[in-house]
Image 1 (cartoon, rainbow, N blue to C red):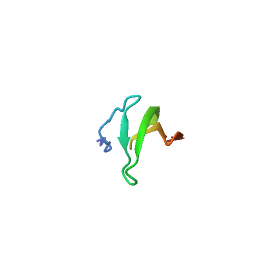
Image 2 (image 1 turned 90 degrees about the horizontal axis):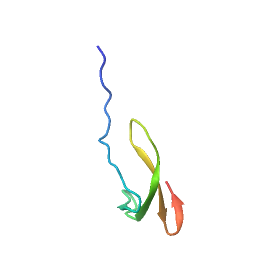
Image 3 (image 1 turned 60 degrees about the vertical axis):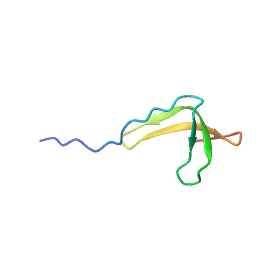
Image 4 (image 1 turned 90 degrees about the vertical axis):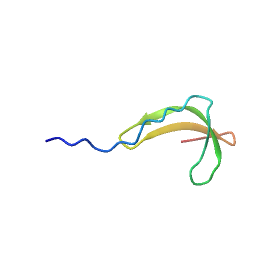
Length: 53
């Protein structure tokens, strides 16, 4: 029997969308998705005129 591994629900962010960080509560502007896997997705964002992921 094959068991399905747990996967977090997909959350799709759009270019230009503003999101708040989980730990530092800073606001980030989404540029694009860099990749995704079983645990989640990584996005390229802008914060204080710097690129962050």
